[in-house]
Image 1 (cartoon, rainbow, N blue to C red):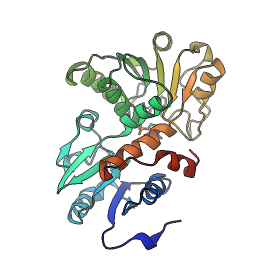
Image 2 (image 1 turned 45 degrees about the vertical axis):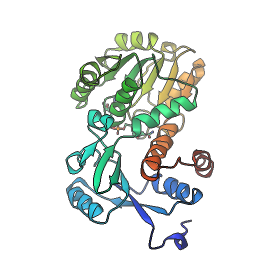
Image 3 (image 1 turned 30 degrees about the vertical axis):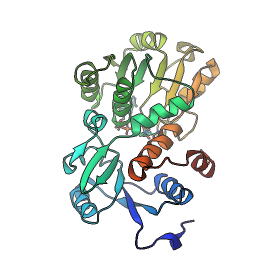
Image 4 (image 1 turned 135 degrees about the vertical axis):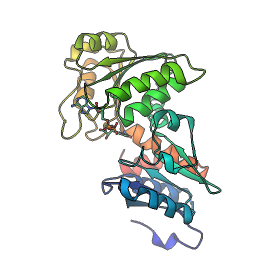
Amino acid sequence: MTDLGRIDGRTKLIGLTATPIGHSLSPAMHNMAFRKSDLNYVYMAFEVGNQQLANVVTGFRALNLRGWNVSMPNKTKILPLLDELSPAAQFAGAVNTVVNENGKLIGHITDGTGYLRGLKENGVDIKGKKITLLGAGGAATAIGIQCAIDGASEIHIFNANDAFQDRAKKNADIINNEIENINCKATVNKLEDLELLKESIKNSDILTNATGVGMKPLENQSLVPDASWLRPELIVSDVVYIPRKTKLLEMAESVGCKTINGLGMMLWQGAAAFEIWTGYEMPVEYVKEQMNL
Ligand code: NAD
């Protein structure tokens, strides 16, 4: 229950723009974390489509909001409305967190760092790892770019023959040619090339599903057709967290792989945003316990 008694003349507002928005776990997560940390902030969700986005950003600027989260469909459309982007947001071409630093709106993307923190919590360090990455949409882009920045050695991107193919090529090009001071090689491949996919999984340390396959309306589906493609040493992660155990993770568990679902990514992308706005660490253990994560 929201403790409205805490709101006073100094309360700082953090927003969230997206549509649809009612299902979001972020307001509950951040408000309980603010209360637990005794921080005078409140987090509110606003139903915002791309048409209203420019006006909303002007309004947020005028009201001097400390910051906000950005979700679909606003994550790419917001770019030209901001004053500065973090390197990861620039490479990903997307923003999920905005912070207002003395009137300057700075865009960050915390999905990739959130994903990696979720791996770390499970004892997995990305440095030197070979990854087979399924997908090239928003989640896959943030993950691929952050893995490259944080030291992965190879990223093999597999995408279906759909509208995201161009983004798959762009992501590989950014990793191979644009991000400086990294030692990561990326390839782009067709998801329909099952022999190549099987070979890539065989040679990888980590297999990551960064598509919506496994979640409604594609629940009980997996892009890996057969559990025999997996082996116990392989780490299998999924961005999906509803259901907590996707068909892919079920298959991986049956083989004895370490499996990691999308809950950690969801939680830690929020924790990173919390820290950007407040300068304090989110009380993650408390949030996990309260939200049954
Ligand atoms: P998106 O629309 O930007 O990208 C969709 C991706 O899925 C593309 O690569 C597309 O080619 C692929 N895809 C879709 N249907 C497919 C199919 N039938 N077969 C093969 N590939 C298919 O979406 P997004 O924002 O990247 O989200 C993808 C998933 O990640 C969603 O399930 C979303 O809920 C989840 N997600 C989780 C987190 C988290 O914090 N855990 C964060 C963001 C997104």
